[in-house]
Length: 186
Image (cartoon, rainbow, N blue to C red; front, side):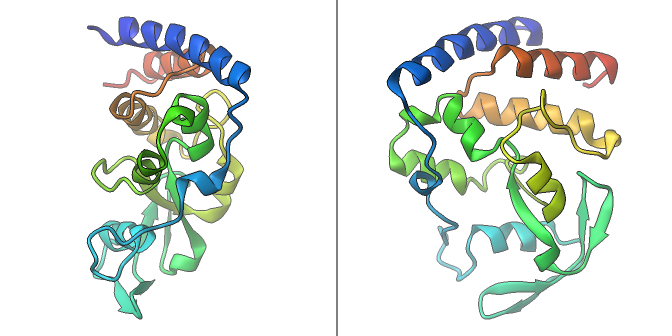
């Protein structure tokens, strides 16, 4: 199936799902997705696993936390040495995942989504201000200020949505298609 057909089907299903969410009154509750977990029991929770993996130099650890390293934030194009300046962003925000089908998941699946380390594009260390400006917006409402990251961002967005079988609404799909076309993303 080509990308345009896939996106068209996802938009149709997303529209249906959005109506269903509204009808059922499935409000988003961040608590249902849980917090960071230490799934491999190495004393680092998901946040610190991402910080350790994405540091461009060997990070320094103290009491099961990353306390220093060197990170490149693809959202802003800036580098950072303090993890206090960074958020670990859910590329497809939890609230967006919820609206796109996650509302029907079990608590276990919601927690798995919130802590997914298998997909390298799912969780990403970024400057906390950029992440907070993004909030729960999809690509129709927010794109990283670093335009050279736009292709990678929307391709990772599609990958997360596909892996987790999440829908896209019409505006989100149109924005993604426009970016893919204008930037000639591959």
